[in-house]
Image 1: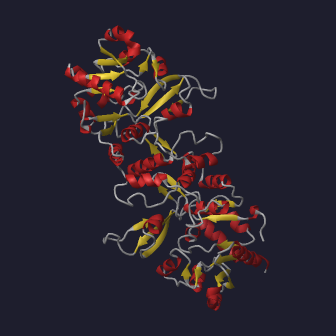
Image 2 (image 1 turned 90 degrees about the vertical axis):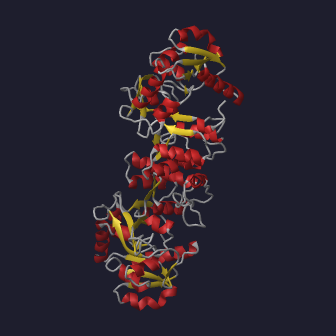
Image 3 (image 1 turned 120 degrees about the vertical axis):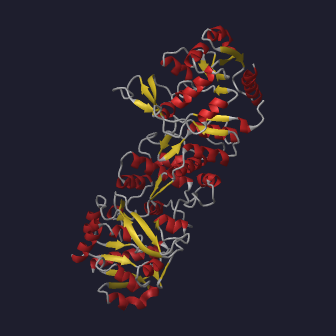
Length: 303
Length: 303
């Protein structure tokens, strides 16, 4: 097992960053930092525990139509993080610098890197217009939070990804890691943004070509997402919601796919994509299961 | 006495508005709205009562040097107001529109108008450099809150005032009011910003020329400010910290100056400026005294 936090680097999606009422919100960075620092709200999986909602209550009292503005929950303690981030970015700090400062402030010891210091915005093109009119393109948070991902998506694009640079240290971390793991998150909208940045994608492709262990953990359990729209989005993007669909989605970017025991029957289909397949428990209900999953991944480095 | 809130319009200084960590803060608008709605914290005279400070606590934990960022107190409930204002301004609403919406949201019935929808920023030029170097120009909030107005000021300027327009309704309210009152606030930095806007100053000058009742209430009690730097700033601007100094400061802009009983001896000096002088209780310790002061002012319309 990894025992030294210095040995771990998390490269984090920032395609779902948003400016909420003037505050720069980085949901994925914060969720990781709150989780690793024990600050996370275990019931929601986002935001801080023992949170209060005074600011939101005021915003709800003031907004003209219910949900017009107050559709993205900002807890009071969480807002402090956003005030800090926004203030530092306004002072000219990079997102990398700010992420490192916030991680340190919360006592997180592993290295946290945003995928890029440039703005990359995940944009969702709806299959049908919301108001019955022409189809619209909306931000990821509008899709995920405001509409609770309960709409059909025609296409996804990562605005700014064409010119975005990988943040300092990202390409190096990818090149040098003993094991690279694409986390069991949404392949389309969570892994999609970093992999849409040329400096990141090419670093991943290169390490696979060089035979360095590069693994994804499938987010599907029995072909379904544990939560969120991973299964639905894979289908909407023309892929199967299955281990084989995930394997094809990551073709050229991984050498191994870890799938859940519930999908053990998919092993041959994954291997048909020229991707090794490891079957194990992937639902991290307990720290022991999470530790065992991590060990399985690390063992791949020693094959 | 005025019994109908529709009869009252407050034209409010926005020269001390600031962007705090991305949030548009309008301290004078909020203080008036919170006061009139009973939301004010009576102990501080700003912010909301029964306030919580979770966001500030987080910001203080994250900031690298104490006071580096967290020098302007933002209560959690208060932040809700700023989130609303910032969101609406980002949507393209004017500050007037937003001020009216917030006032309505808090149940305020009088008309609240910001002095301008354009940005006007009160800038304070220090007499000596803070770090021992060249003299600097700082924002009003840095002067008032961060430095607790405990520095010598060489000059004050209202950035943007030259081109700013009076907000919709402001010039009309000034022209049509039975009585115009310059409130007992800081003549230099609270009344200074609106009076630096040509459309406001000329409307005031015109009503005085037309003989319409136009009164200021001196903020000085026995030649001293009740709180804040009104006395000190008058002196730094080359004026006396006295009723006569206030009268001269407002020359051409008022026909009457109301001074406190503590300054009764200044009456002749005020009148020597060709300004009528009314002596009464001006320290509004109780609603009764405030009501009596208001009645004194209104009676001027019936002279």
